[in-house]
Length: 203
Image (cartoon, rainbow, N blue to C red):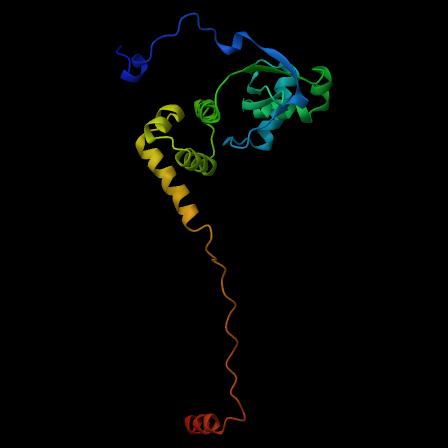
C-alpha cells in the first residue's frame, strides 16, 4: 500500500525514543491544566474514569510540557486523569499524590496541536473551543497548511471553523438585547385638537 506523500517527506529520526518510555512520577501540585483544551467529559463518564483508575490503577500517563523556570508541568493530554487524582481522596491517598507523567518539549503552538490530535484521535473535541483555537493559531501567523497538518483536518473543516470564529468575533461587541415594549398610547386630555379628532372619529 502506497504511503501518503506527506508521510514520506520527513526523514526518519535515528535513535528516536518515544516519551512513553520515560514515565516519571510528579507531585500533582506541580501539574497545571492548560487553557486551550477543547475536550469535554460528562459527569457519568468522569465517575466511570474514577472507578477505572481505582480498580485498574493509572494505565496511561499524562502528557505534559515542563516549564523549567517555574518547575511546573503543563498538561498537553490527560486533563481528566489529572482531575481524578486531585478530586478523588481515595486515589490521591493511594497514589501518594503522585501523577504519572511523560514530558514532551514543544513550543505552545505545537503543544496545542498535540492536545487536539490526542482529542481527535479519541473522537472527542468541542467545536466552539476548536474554532477559538483555530482563530488564535491564525492570529499567531500559522498558515492554513500548518493548521491542517498539525491538527489533522481538511480544508473544508478548517473553513467552517474559521467561519464560526469569524462570525463570533464580528458580533462580539454588538448589543442584541430586545428593547422594552413601547408604552400604550394614552391621549392627552389637554390637547383639544386631539380630543376633537377622536370625537369626530367616534361619530
